Image (cartoon, rainbow, N blue to C red; front, side, top):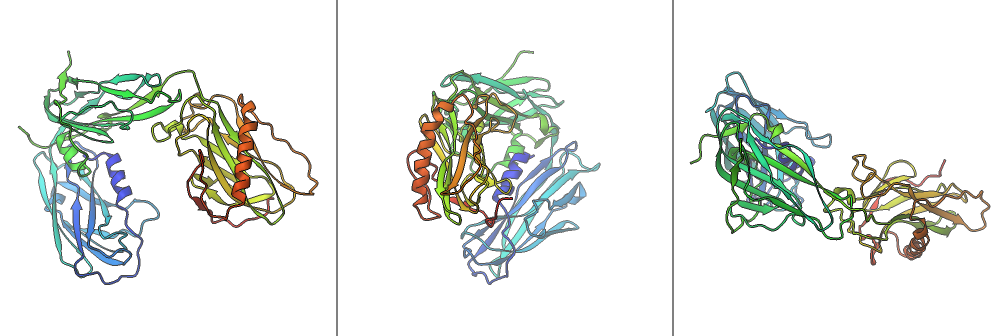
Length: 514
């Protein structure tokens, strides 16, 4: 059974293009039909198969008609077959229909490349009272793009013996910056019949995972290892060698990286494998060892919810970095279009790595001064209300480096309440305020002053234990703001420690603050 993670990944990859007027397709273009094999057990819950297509030699940007027919080969005699149309509110009307033992699909799409992928349907397969081990349906498919040649494809829906692979469950492993920690995944056969071989899917960032080269494992985002060991009912088995996780030596204490462990039957892995996962190792094989206390028929896990585990790799330590939210102050005239810069300064120690640690992607909120309206923002920011913005750190940020988020604003009034930028303590959304960001609000002021205007003075305090650093960082951002103001709107920001993301236009007209 493919995991929901695999199904969602496929759906994200294989999204139908919006409908457009049909156009004639080149006669050389072809459409290849594919359906992920499905293995279920009589005791299984609802299982999914993805019907998807690949175009060959299509003309990019040209709308074409796509047609697919699927003969289910009698699968409806032992399983309930359905089409799940819930791919999201933005997708076009369902292009596929199920009648008797056939699925027919027809839709118009615009390939973006000469070899493009799109999904036609998410097919649900649910066992019935008549379902029994050994049931099998050979799936045959035909497909055509425009007036091109008809192509064929095949797959299978089969019923195997029900098994129950049980992982050790969720847990947290800890180590200091640069220190290794060992993790030895184990699996138990919680069913009543032997399990003939298993596959371990171990997902971890390659920069955190220790070097290995097992010839029965493939390496990509983590590794996938196949074992021919037969797991006896009630027995528990562990890897013959541990997985080793190590963070970079300058990792910020409190950083957390997700690690996923999942055990599958060989049939389930074959069904869900996303093509060539990665190159195999060349060394001695990794094996499974029983703990104290030839390929057979297909098998399916009847309780897939207990065959996986979420591991939190947490970096310990006490040397947290000094982080400062820094705003800026500029002068302008009413009606001017100007750049307002906000930023995050890391005075160290330690380096923030959002690509490795999910809670290193620090979050900032930005509230614009009351006398301006923002209409364009840096990449990584989106609006939350009329004058509020949410930004996420997406770059590696070492000691003495800063990330800058620039906004294009229009000055609409002489006076207005000051704005502010604040670092949120809960970057990963799990409520952990004691992670990377230490307790205490970290706020930097934003202001746009109009020369000659007489306004009531409203001062925003610079808060947090790092307030002493803010003056220097703020001065640097003010200089950056002056440089940005001199640039033409729409140009990207570049420079040491600055965000180089493209600005994102926001479809919101400037309006006076109320």
